Image 1: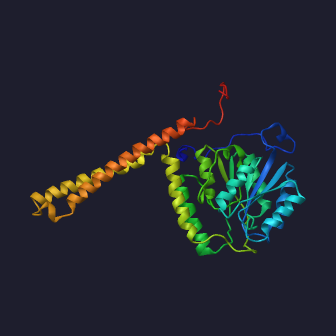
Image 2: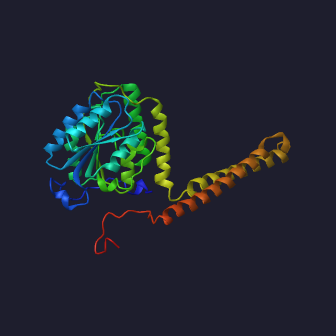
Length: 348
């Protein structure tokens, strides 16, 4: 993994080639210039309209494109509608998952099947307008690797959605040092190279820019429109807040300490040793100057308990170090990623 503190600082984008137009991408590894990934779960009312709007925007861009709908185990007629769209338009690709795995898994399935040099993600509920996709592409055109949407005027329930979201965004920016105002907005655009080795679990889809920043991506954010949900019901509840917080803790550990886990376990072990020593000194003080025998206080048990916790923590840290090194070295993985070289053999 990578350390975001070393790679997510604000960088001025350098000049890059323009995004490929129709025909140019034939000389590259990707089959199309643009992939639009849309996870779907029980959104039958909006599917045809989403398809029509995305198609209109994609055609206007004059780039080869594909639209990938990922049916995340929908229980309505959405699957049949998607198959119908795929039959009528060869640019529409449909991935039907066996059951509902969640938005993160659905987006991961979309990434795995996308062939575009640029990958755009979009919800199927039409709260985000596909007409804002050119704004994201313009951000990449300016030299950024990720362009994220910011729902500045969000049309959701204020207390249960907006307030909690703003608190989570502030906490995430503080923890990961990636300055985004809206992590939860699905409308984002990515350069394909930063999605190649990405693996997502839990509710991690909202933190994809954090992974990208850890890999050295340059990130920008643009204001996008947001409308009230007019069809279907929201799939988000308060229970997801707990999952998001736990995912943030896990991601912080993976990005910061995955290559040096002994710092976490060993640090906790040393803290336990210090607590054990403090309890021992207090125990001795009570014995000789406080008029308390060893059996009259729980301090002897506390000394032993903290000492054992310290030993176990240090041993766990050493074991984690061995596992981490085995993981990287057995698979030939490196702890860094090269953007470009000069006067060197790039394939060497």
